[in-house]
Image 1 (tube, rainbow, N blue to C red):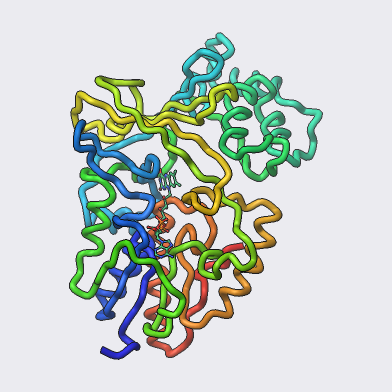
Image 2 (image 1 turned 180 degrees about the vertical axis):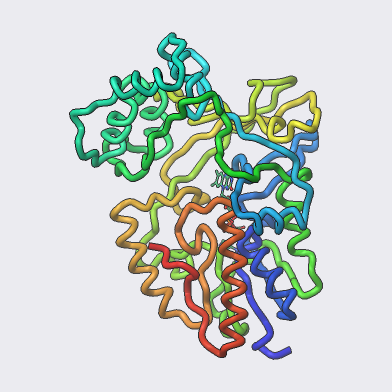
Length: 385
Ligand SMILES: Cc1cc2nc3c(=O)[nH]c(=O)nc-3n(C[C@H](O)[C@H](O)[C@H](O)COP(=O)(O)OP(=O)(O)OC[C@H]3O[C@@H](n4cnc5c(N)ncnc54)[C@H](O)[C@@H]3O)c2cc1C
C-alpha cells in the first residue's frame, strides 16, 4: 500500500476515533495508536465487576449538545438513555441545589421570593462599588454579593484552580450565574443523555471498521510521521515537541475511589463549597445510569491540584503565562509538515464531547477537501489562541 493512502492517528479517544472512522469510510487505511491499555481516552467507562455499576474512570461524563448532527452521529453508534444532570452542593452544613436558582436563594436566605422579588433582592446584594470588575472575585461580588459568593463560588473555585479567585480573570464568570426559576437542570442543551452501555462501547463501535487498526500501549514517536500521508495528533501539544519550550500548565485530578453498600448520597454529584473540605465533589456513579439497579455503589472523592510531569493533564489553565507559551508551541506546530493537532490536548483547550466530535468531523472533512484540491492540510482546524 502506498504511503499516500495511510493515515496515522495518535490517540484512541473521541477525537482520534471520529477522524479515523470518517477517513476509513473514504477508503484510507488508518492506524490508531494509544499509549493507554484501553480505547476511549478520558471518556473511558468500565463496568465494576463487584457492584455492576458503570464507572466513569476519568471522572463523570454527561453528554449534552445543541448540535443535531452530532447528536444523530452518536445515536448512530449506541442507544442514549435520558439523563439530566442535577447537581447538589454541601455548604456551611446545609445541602443546596445548583446551579444557584430560586430554590437555592430562597433556602439560603430563608425567603419565599417570587422571581421578580429575588431579582430585586440580588441587585441589592450586589456590590455596586465595583464598576469595572477585573478578577473572578470582583465579578462574582458585583453579580451576586458577598453571601452567595462565599457560599457557592469562592471555596469551590479556590479548590478547583488552586489559587485565590482574586488571581483569576473576571472572564471566567461571563454571565450572571443565577437562575430566577426552579430549573435545576445543569445544562441548557436541547439533547442530553447517557450512552446505555457506557462511552467505551460507543467508541468501540466507532472504531469498528475494516480499514482501522488500533494498537494499544503504544506511544507515538515523531519519526513515524514519514511513513504516513498525514498524522492527526490528539496527544499533548507540548509533548509532541518533547516539552522543549517548557510544560503548558494543567490542573490534574485525583480520584479517591470508595464503595458503599446502598445509596451513599442519593444523587450523582455532590459539590463541596467549603474550603475546609479538601475535595471539590463526590460522584456516585450508579446515579449516572438511573435506568439500572445496583445494590452496591462506587463513589469518587475528587481532588484538584497542579499537574506534574507524571500526572494526567485534565484542565488547561490558559492564563496569561500559559497563553504566551502556547503561542510559541502553535508557531512550532505550524512549521510541521503533514501533522494536524486535534482534540483537547492537541489544541490545549477544554472541549466538551460534542465540540470534540464536531471538530473531529470538520477536521476529517477539511482533510478530504484539501486532498481533493491538492492543497496542504493546516496544523489546526481553528487557531487555538
Ligand atoms: C474531569 C472531566 C470531566 C468531563 N466531563 C465532561 C462532560 O460531562 N461532558 C462533556 O461533554 N465533556 C466532558 N469532558 C470533556 C471530555 O473528556 C473531552 O471532550 C474528550 O475526552 C476529548 O477527547 P479527545 O480524544 O480530544 O482527548 P482524550 O480523551 O484525552 O484522548 C486522547 C488520547 O490520546 C492518547 N495519547 C496522548 N498522548 C499520546 C502519545 N504520545 N502516544 C499515544 N497515545 C497518546 C491518550 O492516552 C488518550 O487516550 C470532561 C473532561 C474532564 C477532564
